[in-house]
Amino acid sequence: MDSTTHTTTTVEFVDWRAKAKEKLEAEDKLFKGGRAAASVQSYVLRALLNFADQEPRFAEVVCNTERTFSECCAAVVHNAGEVLSDLEAYRKAVQFYFPNAEISFSMNINLTGTPPTEEEMRAPATIKPEDAAPNIPKPQEPKKGKTDQKKQKPEKKPAKKKEKQSEDSMQLSLEGWF
Image (cartoon, rainbow, N blue to C red; front, side):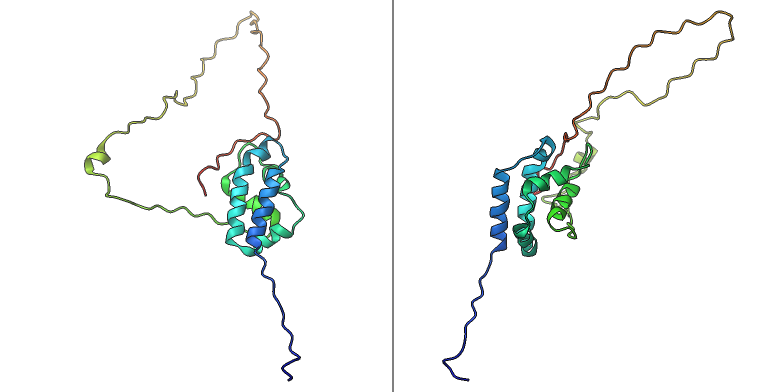
Protein backbone atom coordinates (compact mmCIF):
# COMPACT_ATOMS: atom_id res chain seq x y z
CA MET A 1 0.00 0.00 0.00
CA ASP A 2 1.27 3.41 -0.91
CA SER A 3 1.59 5.73 2.04
CA THR A 4 0.11 8.62 0.08
CA THR A 5 -3.21 6.92 -0.73
CA HIS A 6 -4.78 6.32 2.69
CA THR A 7 -8.01 7.94 3.76
CA THR A 8 -9.03 9.19 7.15
CA THR A 9 -12.55 8.84 8.45
CA THR A 10 -13.76 11.43 10.90
CA VAL A 11 -16.42 10.34 13.35
CA GLU A 12 -18.44 13.11 14.87
CA PHE A 13 -19.40 12.54 18.48
CA VAL A 14 -22.97 13.57 19.25
CA ASP A 15 -23.78 14.37 22.87
CA TRP A 16 -27.36 13.13 22.87
CA ARG A 17 -27.76 13.87 26.56
CA ALA A 18 -27.00 17.56 26.08
CA LYS A 19 -29.18 17.76 22.96
CA ALA A 20 -32.10 16.07 24.73
CA LYS A 21 -31.74 18.48 27.64
CA GLU A 22 -31.76 21.45 25.24
CA LYS A 23 -34.80 20.12 23.37
CA LEU A 24 -36.84 19.33 26.49
CA GLU A 25 -36.02 22.62 28.18
CA ALA A 26 -36.87 24.60 25.03
CA GLU A 27 -40.18 22.76 24.66
CA ASP A 28 -40.89 23.30 28.36
CA LYS A 29 -40.69 27.07 27.79
CA LEU A 30 -43.26 26.73 24.96
CA PHE A 31 -45.52 24.43 27.00
CA LYS A 32 -49.20 24.33 26.06
CA GLY A 33 -51.63 22.22 28.01
CA GLY A 34 -54.56 21.96 30.39
CA ARG A 35 -54.47 22.19 34.17
CA ALA A 36 -53.83 18.48 34.65
CA ALA A 37 -50.92 18.43 32.21
CA ALA A 38 -49.52 21.61 33.74
CA SER A 39 -49.71 20.03 37.21
CA VAL A 40 -47.25 17.30 36.19
CA GLN A 41 -45.13 19.43 33.83
CA SER A 42 -42.19 20.30 36.09
CA TYR A 43 -42.02 16.82 37.64
CA VAL A 44 -42.14 15.02 34.31
CA LEU A 45 -39.51 17.37 32.88
CA ARG A 46 -37.17 16.67 35.79
CA ALA A 47 -37.71 12.90 35.41
CA LEU A 48 -37.15 12.93 31.64
CA LEU A 49 -33.95 14.96 32.02
CA ASN A 50 -32.76 12.43 34.59
CA PHE A 51 -33.64 9.48 32.33
CA ALA A 52 -31.94 11.09 29.31
CA ASP A 53 -28.84 11.58 31.42
CA GLN A 54 -28.93 7.91 32.49
CA GLU A 55 -29.47 6.40 29.05
CA PRO A 56 -27.99 7.94 25.86
CA ARG A 57 -30.24 5.81 23.61
CA PHE A 58 -33.29 7.29 25.30
CA ALA A 59 -31.80 10.78 24.89
CA GLU A 60 -31.25 10.12 21.18
CA VAL A 61 -34.87 9.04 20.70
CA VAL A 62 -36.08 12.17 22.53
CA CYS A 63 -33.97 14.28 20.16
CA ASN A 64 -35.10 12.54 16.99
CA THR A 65 -38.83 12.37 17.67
CA GLU A 66 -41.22 14.97 16.34
CA ARG A 67 -43.41 14.61 19.42
CA THR A 68 -43.34 17.50 21.86
CA PHE A 69 -43.01 17.76 25.62
CA SER A 70 -46.51 19.32 25.77
CA GLU A 71 -47.90 16.24 24.02
CA CYS A 72 -45.97 14.04 26.45
CA CYS A 73 -47.58 15.70 29.48
CA ALA A 74 -51.01 15.40 27.84
CA ALA A 75 -50.37 11.67 27.29
CA VAL A 76 -49.30 11.24 30.92
CA VAL A 77 -52.59 12.57 32.30
CA HIS A 78 -54.83 11.09 29.57
CA ASN A 79 -57.41 8.72 31.14
CA ALA A 80 -55.70 9.08 34.51
CA GLY A 81 -58.87 9.76 36.47
CA GLU A 82 -58.45 11.53 39.79
CA VAL A 83 -55.30 9.77 40.97
CA LEU A 84 -52.03 8.98 39.22
CA SER A 85 -49.04 7.50 41.01
CA ASP A 86 -45.60 8.98 40.49
CA LEU A 87 -44.32 5.72 39.07
CA GLU A 88 -47.16 5.49 36.54
CA ALA A 89 -46.70 9.14 35.51
CA TYR A 90 -43.00 8.63 34.82
CA ARG A 91 -43.64 5.30 33.06
CA LYS A 92 -46.15 6.97 30.73
CA ALA A 93 -43.72 9.81 30.04
CA VAL A 94 -40.88 7.44 29.14
CA GLN A 95 -43.12 5.24 27.02
CA PHE A 96 -44.42 8.30 25.17
CA TYR A 97 -40.95 8.59 23.63
CA PHE A 98 -39.72 4.99 23.85
CA PRO A 99 -42.80 2.68 23.87
CA ASN A 100 -41.08 -0.53 24.94
CA ALA A 101 -39.06 1.06 27.76
CA GLU A 102 -39.71 0.37 31.42
CA ILE A 103 -38.65 2.22 34.53
CA SER A 104 -37.85 0.86 37.95
CA PHE A 105 -38.28 2.43 41.34
CA SER A 106 -36.20 1.73 44.40
CA MET A 107 -36.41 3.04 47.95
CA ASN A 108 -33.74 2.30 50.50
CA ILE A 109 -33.39 3.03 54.17
CA ASN A 110 -30.15 4.38 55.56
CA LEU A 111 -29.96 4.04 59.32
CA THR A 112 -27.85 6.74 60.88
CA GLY A 113 -26.99 7.23 64.50
CA THR A 114 -27.96 4.98 67.34
CA PRO A 115 -31.24 3.10 67.69
CA PRO A 116 -33.93 4.60 69.95
CA THR A 117 -33.68 3.87 73.66
CA GLU A 118 -36.17 1.64 75.47
CA GLU A 119 -37.70 4.77 77.00
CA GLU A 120 -38.14 6.39 73.57
CA MET A 121 -39.78 3.26 72.20
CA ARG A 122 -42.26 3.11 75.14
CA ALA A 123 -43.21 6.78 74.87
CA PRO A 124 -46.73 7.40 73.54
CA ALA A 125 -47.17 9.05 70.19
CA THR A 126 -47.34 12.83 70.29
CA ILE A 127 -49.66 12.96 67.29
CA LYS A 128 -52.88 10.99 67.51
CA PRO A 129 -55.17 9.86 64.70
CA GLU A 130 -58.14 12.08 64.06
CA ASP A 131 -61.18 11.30 66.13
CA ALA A 132 -63.75 9.90 63.79
CA ALA A 133 -67.07 8.32 64.50
CA PRO A 134 -66.74 4.55 64.31
CA ASN A 135 -68.22 2.99 61.23
CA ILE A 136 -71.10 1.24 63.03
CA PRO A 137 -74.35 0.60 61.17
CA LYS A 138 -77.49 2.24 62.58
CA PRO A 139 -79.80 -0.13 64.45
CA GLN A 140 -82.95 -0.98 62.55
CA GLU A 141 -86.21 0.25 64.01
CA PRO A 142 -88.60 -2.51 65.07
CA LYS A 143 -91.40 -3.13 62.61
CA LYS A 144 -94.70 -1.68 63.71
CA GLY A 145 -98.01 -3.37 63.20
CA LYS A 146 -100.12 -2.40 60.20
CA THR A 147 -102.47 0.47 60.74
CA ASP A 148 -105.38 1.62 58.68
CA GLN A 149 -104.09 5.14 58.60
CA LYS A 150 -102.09 6.13 55.64
CA LYS A 151 -98.62 7.25 56.49
CA GLN A 152 -97.66 10.65 55.38
CA LYS A 153 -94.63 10.46 53.23
CA PRO A 154 -92.01 12.95 54.24
CA GLU A 155 -91.26 15.53 51.61
CA LYS A 156 -88.07 14.61 49.85
CA LYS A 157 -85.53 17.31 49.38
CA PRO A 158 -83.64 17.30 46.12
CA ALA A 159 -80.19 15.80 46.47
CA LYS A 160 -77.30 18.18 46.42
CA LYS A 161 -75.47 18.13 43.16
CA LYS A 162 -71.88 17.05 43.48
CA GLU A 163 -69.42 19.40 41.94
CA LYS A 164 -67.89 17.49 39.09
CA GLN A 165 -64.22 18.13 38.55
CA SER A 166 -63.25 19.15 35.09
CA GLU A 167 -61.89 16.38 32.90
CA ASP A 168 -58.37 17.78 33.00
CA SER A 169 -58.35 18.27 36.78
CA MET A 170 -56.03 16.10 38.84
CA GLN A 171 -54.03 16.24 42.06
CA LEU A 172 -50.57 14.72 42.22
CA SER A 173 -47.78 14.68 44.73
CA LEU A 174 -44.53 14.10 42.95
CA GLU A 175 -42.27 16.16 45.21
CA GLY A 176 -39.04 14.76 46.56
CA TRP A 177 -38.38 11.79 44.27
CA PHE A 178 -35.37 13.24 42.48
